[in-house]
Length: 511
Image 1 (cartoon, rainbow, N blue to C red):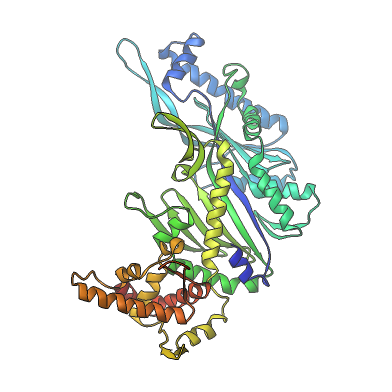
Image 2 (image 1 turned 90 degrees about the vertical axis):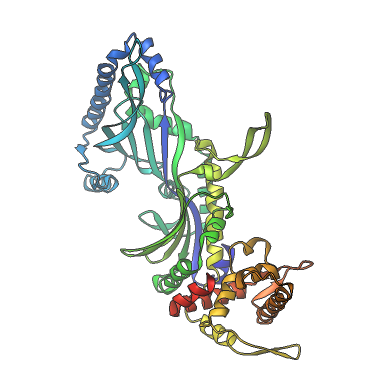
């Protein structure tokens, strides 16, 4: 990220990395049919009476919600079909009624949930898992710490609770408390007077006592915790986390021309290897899953998303002045965390797949921040419009070095484009590349040793030309090369020119 910010230092007013939307889910120790059996036995209820038992307590949840809304003088409404955006409805109600704190409204919707049903068994009926629809209640609160949040509870056993909040709302409250000036629009900061202090505050988000905070919200919406479920506590997990790195530009005319180039570069130049590298992974033979790039134009701009299975990283602009790179984690098991675990029957401290427990939220932040920074570093090669023209012109001219003349490069040449694509491959970004790595990309395998030597010599000449133009540099005390900052910028630009002008030729040469 530092290279991107340094490149545009005169246009950037600040940088902030912060959690955006975070979705927590709480589960009672009733998720197993056996646990539900125990609850029925403890209350003297037969399995055959399961449905009337749960229906009675389901009505208690609904009645408590209606009573809360009536006592607070707030609306209790049906959200209708799934096309209604509940957050927008709640925000409109809060603005209309000038709600400053407390309950805003309760919205209801019939949605799918994980529950149980009774089936015939040998000698007695059995409780089994089931996927069914039930009424779900969305409680919208204006909280002094977290702003507008929703707490969702299913009205059928096992009463799963979901809490959704926004890290930018939380940070805004902290900045206000410390009297740090800022300009904010929706969930983005356009300006912050002290970005350094703001980042320190944002980093404290993961250190909150989340089980206690979330359990307090659950106690507001689940009256059964006081009697039927007394002694039970929710186990909280992070079901989805969005972590954004915002680069705040000084004005829209500065960002908008650059943003178009960044979108083009990301769409043309970032392949599967790059996306995996951004997310801290390597493309291996055992990798099972899809890596996709997706670009959509929407009001008021466009966004690009790179998806690896159920996780993704995306880039878009906010209100014309904020460049946002955001990593979203839905499946944390794709990443690793250092913790105690069992290996070969022994307890060891090592890197294991990361689970969803809220105790791992700090690791979510580390993984996402690193991914965002890698993405911005990869975009640092994109020059601001107008700066690249002269450099590209110079790259096409012959150059003299140590008494010898070396040719220039042509961005519309198929062989040159194949060379650029070979040296810019994602796997070369970590350890560099050797002659044989580039040779394997440019030439088919030759069984004849003499032909192999000719191919190696030709590759050496091509690397020498790249070197004298300042596009690659030797890694000291090795036989490996690396792409320079200048090379990253110009080679990627020339590759984009070739892809835009002659995409069919590029595909043929790379294949």
